[in-house]
Image 1 (cartoon, one colour):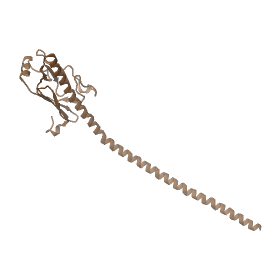
Image 2 (cartoon, one colour; image 1 turned 30 degrees about the horizontal axis):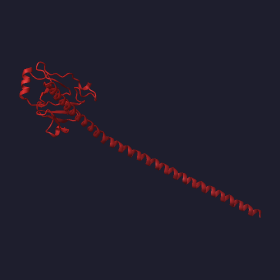
Image 3 (cartoon, one colour; image 1 turned 30 degrees about the vertical axis):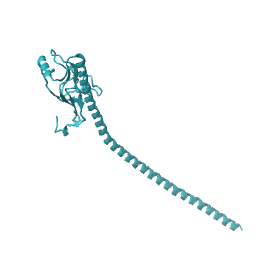
Image 4 (tube, rainbow, N blue to C red; image 1 turned 120 degrees about the horizontal axis):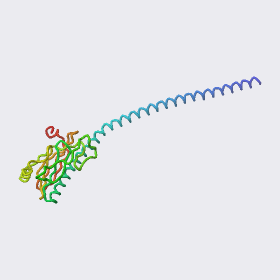
Length: 229
């Protein structure tokens, strides 16, 4: 009887040891699987991060030139609006004061001035600013937006402008050109381009002599109209 009890005890110990070992083996397999899954998840996460970064880099590379071009286009259109507004001001002043007024500008720069025309004193630019001294928000009141310059205008010579030029002994001061506005609301027929040098883009303004009003074109590229300026 004692032998049987001993045998039963041994069987029980063996069974318990087997269950403990089996549980340990299962835990080991589970731990290995968990570690493998964690490693896989980490690898996938890093790969996904790299893909996202690559996509973002491509989006930035595409978006920056587009946004920059849009900003520069707006700047060029703003310059054209400034010129058109100053022409309207010169016309209004000529009508109001009953004397000729001049839009004076310097080709190749963004400097301009609106002032009464005098046969005794050639019109002059009130101030000149070097391009390197101009900020992004320094425009109007004698300056086009930074990077935008005047091309030389095609200005018609009529009887009144020819007579005024003879009386004054010439046109504007050295380096400057002018467009005249008359007290009856008319002006010299003129065609002018404002140019964004960095892009070689331009906007053309056509000043109608009978009405003294301007028509502004869309943004154009010099390469599409037969070459450079």
